[in-house]
Image 1 (cartoon, rainbow, N blue to C red):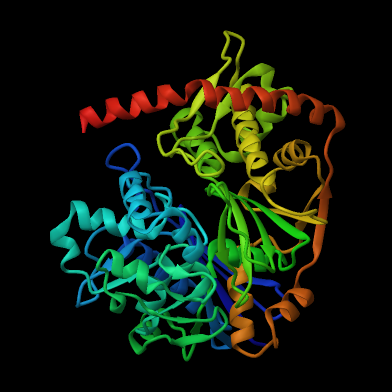
Image 2: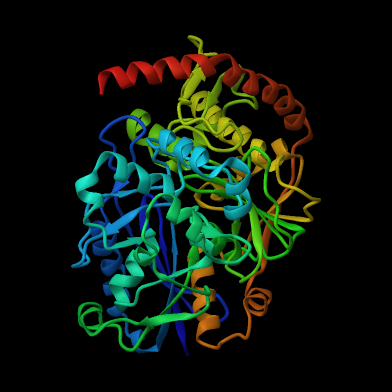
Length: 495
């Protein structure tokens, strides 16, 4: 029996899952880590901690009796993060990760230097603060001493792959989220790099997601117990998650309730949003694209409520929320704890509760958070083009029937879960299976592996309540937009 490992380097932790060729889970191990936030809008993580935790995952796999049957590793990782290495391959600073919002000025700098229409044509997107290029320019503008020492620029998962193999590669799906790739030509956009005097040599050679990067080094073999294991290109977390959910065709869509909330849909033809309300990137299938809407505060909101307010487990919180009525007795929540992407593109936006009364209890607060995230998912879903025949819901939030029913009722469509619940880790492993010649193509692998587990239908009464609530939800942001900017100005005075 041959086994393949999918490693998902996420925002809150890294998970390694071992699969057989049919997608059955053989073993799983996870390690957690935290976001470092020195001030409002900042979000960083230590790449060395990523590596330490990933090696811990691999060591646990290496202790299993069947470890000699592990053939390959596929990597999935959080997108847009900035990892900077010096000539000795040491991280120069903490990684600035996807949900960091400090780079609004740099996004404007990019747009002014290149021009909005030219930038969209080259990269597929408007300039946005979360993208890697804006983060790199922030370091150039604010940390010139560090900038001058840069030898390599990597995305999070590519840093891990480099440390495992000592081979300097990147792949198209993740790189398309850096805003330095020509999305049609599938090559680095040298005119964008030249505009800011950024050396092309800093960036890794591009390969396909199912190509083999190399084999783990002797040192990694000794440390983990794994032997002669290859590492393939892998994919950004959303592209990997789409493969792990069988979302390959235009009639498919996925909703991921992870740290961020993502609505994702493949497209055969390149679509570029006029105002950047949705983003367009390459998929893990070479030459194809996907449209993606992102809400930053999805799982982050419930995690904040768990860790900072209630100190309860997610199951206990969901049980309390299920006792609250649909609409949470008119308590509303804006999930903008770290600004927001789709559709408002507002890094100044803040989290808000409104409608609190002396009768508001724990269940109402928790459900209002779930519903606030649901409304933000609806924001994203409404911008995805085409009639979707199958909508797959996944991520940690999808384990809750209540959450699935809220989402289905808000978008007026049934949602399905697949039997394999590992999402991005499974997608990464499938890429490794294709690299290892278990399957000829990604499509063949998904058609063989992915199976539907269950379907959750909308509740007719909830649909009506949520349509009324959605109108109020949209108004809350509009009425508070100016206040968010005033708060940001006050924060800037402090720092």
